Length: 288
Image (cartoon, rainbow, N blue to C red; front, side, top):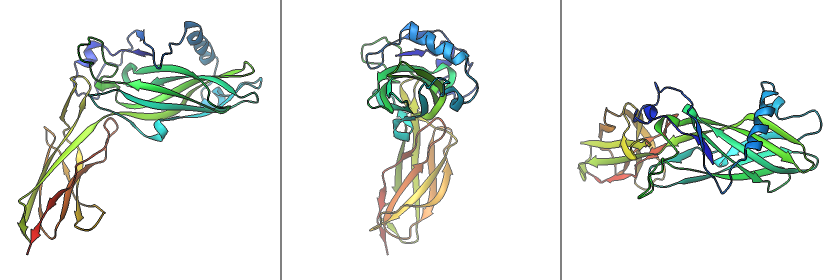
């Protein structure tokens, strides 16, 4: 695996998602899945990219019967959510076609502020090539190795790919897929008093936090809209009854009327940089 490391100035920004200098530091090489791309392959990608036009469709087709690249699917179409405690491994599948069948594929993942991963694989079928990527935002115990991710890297990433066919043909395409690489979030909830008399007031509190890839801790997520939801006893369906914004430290609080027995929870649907989170339901016994 190789990736562009973020600058020390970016890492010092803590939870900042914007206003980070978009400089591109020099890349460092590291293996992903036991594969490091050779300089000759990287050079071939550069030459091909320089001679291609603007669209991914045009880039994926060559004039001499070379492979056609139809797209790339990352993590089965789901966001990649990364916390601060363990590596996250996810698949990238490059799809295409060629009369002789696909032989191998390289994939480059490119993200905000120089985020970069790359690996390659032999294709598992004539039309699909699946490879595994590993990302992390934590320090291994006793290790001084820098982590792969900083807060500035969270957001929308894109996929470039180079495929080779069994007959020696090849094709390159940029932007054949996109995905969200996001910081993990957590939510808590507490509804009180319990039990409570019917018609009385219940105060529901909680806190929304998210992974800080710069400090390796979870910290409050300020100014985010979070839904308060209720599920009656005996039902499996939650209904939104209010929407509350987190304060400067990620805390939530609102007051509702006790009508019947049931479960209260907070539900955060996520943002462009942060994954969704739901608190477990807190049961409140409502008495006549």
